[in-house]
View 1 (cartoon, rainbow, N blue to C red):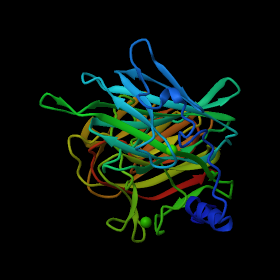
View 2 (view 1 turned 180 degrees about the vertical axis):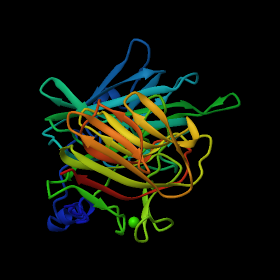
View 3 (view 1 turned 180 degrees about the horizontal axis):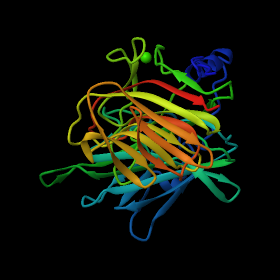
Amino acid sequence: MVVSFKSAFVICAYVGASAAQAQEPPPNLLPNPGFEETPDALLGEGRTIGEGKDTFSCPGWWGGRSKGTVRVSGDTRDKAGGKTSLRFDFLDPDTDNEVFVQGRVHGVKPRTIYRLGGKFKVLNVNWVFSFSHTYEYVGDERVGGTGRRTINYPTSSGFEDREVWIITGPKVSWIEVRIQWRGRPTIEGIVRQPSIVWMDDLVLEEIGPVFPPEGDYLAEDFEGKELDGWVLTEIGAHWEPTDPGYGDARSPQISDEQAHSGKQSLKMVPTWGVVTRPFDREVSNCIVTGWFYEVPSTPNDKCRGIVLLADDGKRVGLGTHRESLSNYICYLDTGVKVTDVPKSQAWHEFKFDVTEGEGVVCFIDGVEVGRTDKIDRFSSVQIGEHAWRGSTAFVDDLSIVMKP
Ligand SMILES: [Ca+2]
Ligand SMILES: [Ca+2]
């Protein structure tokens, strides 16, 4: 039996919690989140970190630069809240200056959804790029963490709110959160503009646990008004770790442009963005089915589609990739495999047969297109655009049915 999870998990759980405790928003778990405790040594001119001077500290945070030369300071004039913001001046015109801040957060729960947000501002930075990492620990042992999550950089001249959502793994007691910036100064003619990044009012708050066990697993037809139960986890996800990109908070989204069932499906627009459906445990011995419809792609198309992700980070997926503009792609632990199934602008059935101890067999329209014995279970399903400049595609009728 398949039980629908259309009981509006994340959004309603969050709103419901807010309504029930109107005066008590979830606590901010980050230390010194508004950089109000910036030490005197970082005020005024701050300090310049370059060769031989690679770290700085601010209560609750430490940081450094990995490339270029960056001045770090607490800015008492330009801030989003309180008295101070944390400011980075990119000084080296010849490289992509890289700088990060990293802070420890204790008392984090496993298999739980968190929101990492903040207010950010940039000035005169050419090709600025920002992203977060989280590293998960039990005691001294690192047990997991998210990959890089792109934070879209601000586009106005003021502070803008940005956020990414994080799902913790099966065992974690504390995490380190890192926010990293990369960019080089803008130069017009021989004039180098001051190139600055500001951060203020960071927040890490608990949204809620991932799905509790409730019958069998999933039947999602995307007929709701909201993307209930899905978490926008990766603005700027990537299959290939060397391939950065900018994200788009509008993707994926519910759409009535195409439908395999009913009137709606999940639409991915041609930029980065991934939604994740997390489960409270690893799932095996099941059939995962989803329907995929792609509008003809461009030569820049990289990959997208449906991906099963295990606790250890292993994954298997079906979608498209620039390796082949004519055929669909199977993503295996060994890399991208071009299938024999030609693409067409129609609904196609993507199917994964998952068997404990054996692995995953992938099918498109009933034809086996790939198999792996490196992953035999998963704890989340991801749908999304893993590419900058992809094409437009739709997913509908995702189901997970336990095998008898
Ligand atoms: Ca502040
Ligand atoms: Ca539908």
